[in-house]
Length: 186
Image 1: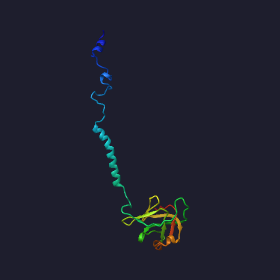
Image 2: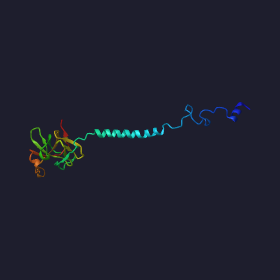
Image 3: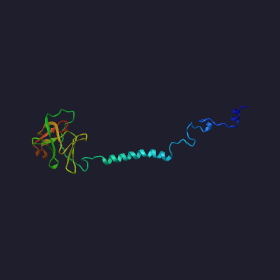
């Protein structure tokens, strides 16, 4: 009998690393390693920290979001016509600085000193903030202009009593149907 046979019978030989007799751990792995990368506390922290981070970012965005013109704004009656984007545009130039008159009337102060009472495209709205600033919004609720903003558009002058019978129109030099996209000047 050889010494190797003795070792096999008595079990005195050292088992090969990584073998089942050695506990099945790969070479270089500490013998006290239990197979868990993190403790239970580590797993809990790993699950909770991303949610806390997201909540913190959401809070920062909410606190820093600028709510312009929505504080205690009240609706302003805004005259509208039936023009929609994609329809034929008006041919007369319409331009001026958006100004507020008495009774919630919105005018354009033209550079020649005249006052134009605009009749806005379909679906447009206006709101007046607690500080008296009037904001005009298009049919997608996008801000178009505020009091003091100069705008340019095209349209068609009107004498229709549907629009000119208004007390706002009575205070203006002319009334015009805005029949185009409105752009800010300057």
